[in-house]
Length: 529
Image 1 (cartoon, rainbow, N blue to C red):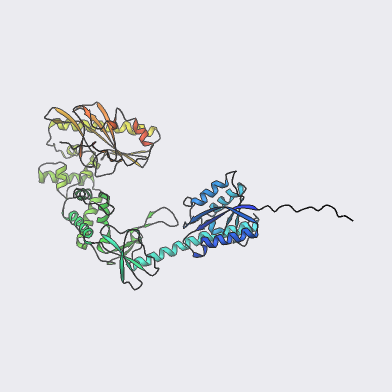
Image 2 (tube, rainbow, N blue to C red):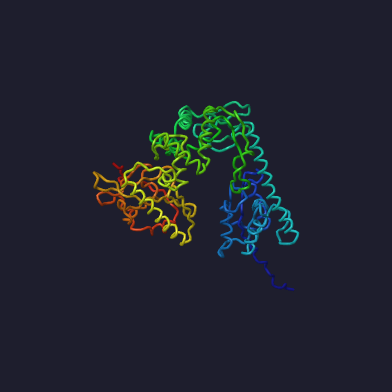
């Protein structure tokens, strides 16, 4: 009897999946090779074809923003044309060690909402959405987060122990210092260059004075500051004039000098844990009594006596004097020098600084009035300067109101005529009348500030003792030589036409853009005569 027709079984449909690999530095058992092997075995056993690979190598699982592969995976999941319907991951900890366990759940839910299932191939539970599975996953996520917290605590304690033993705990050494590699017996092996690090676990790193040239220059900085009436900006200017550059080949800045003068590393003291950032959190200042400080940890560069003298002066300069103290200091200068001006204030170390006077009174002329001093200036020059300051204040008020009306946050510093826009753009305003050649030919001169950083110099021109603004020049950083007087306009013709503006409307456009460093244009600057 003939048999009926046979029904052939249809072809087995293979599922397509993407695999996500993350390798951090916390444990060798999670190597990419091991993860790929486990995922491949699971895929073969369940007839799954891996078509796409995402890998974050050597990246912590604490945050989402620093994991480009996971970011791309979640973007591709939302694409209707994706070629996979599952994501294979080794285990819950490879998906992330987020400190907020709900964050890990949210990213998994984003995949499931788009129709993509996340499978943890090395876990004992099936990711089927059952109540038991949800509880286990929540527990696993909490354990992964706790593992990161525990590792962070152990690493920090280990670094503190190394610092207490006098070893370098990380970070680049300062100018005039170098890192020395020691073996397990604390015997010196060799100096470490930039981007060189120890590779043997038992090795240690200490700090030592750099070659003679750098160490000698550091000692000279301390000597100048301890014995001469010079500031950090003055030392930086002096070094740049000598043609000396820092370790990176760049000109010296005042903040570089101040950082060197404050560092206890130059007297051989190892200081650690002044700032702290735990679990990818923001950096915070640690109270000084919680710092780890080990004296005589390594060979000093400068004498303690000189260092103490420098710290005493810096602390005195850092303390804001009262109005009465400033007035008393100005009276003392007048009695000693018979006159009062910027030069005499800078000459006497015990006198209040020009910056302190301008910060307290707004200008030197207001300070002159407060102490009853009549400056020894030509009446015409005094009138010109008074007109310049008055118009500067008027322009500042209008500019600030206009920027604020367009939604910008503006903070004005009266003592430097500088306003900061949205906490990133710094504009310095200067309104100047002309100098005279031979008593009758006017020319206007600008000076880029070198004692504080700015992004743009807004330079307004007026006639002598005039009240009407002729025009503005908006100079970007790099267009003028810092600290030097540069001729802007002479014989009725500007030397900087590309920066000339009839008004300040362009400031609104500048405020909407991130400032860029401008390369000086050859032949655009000239020194005043």
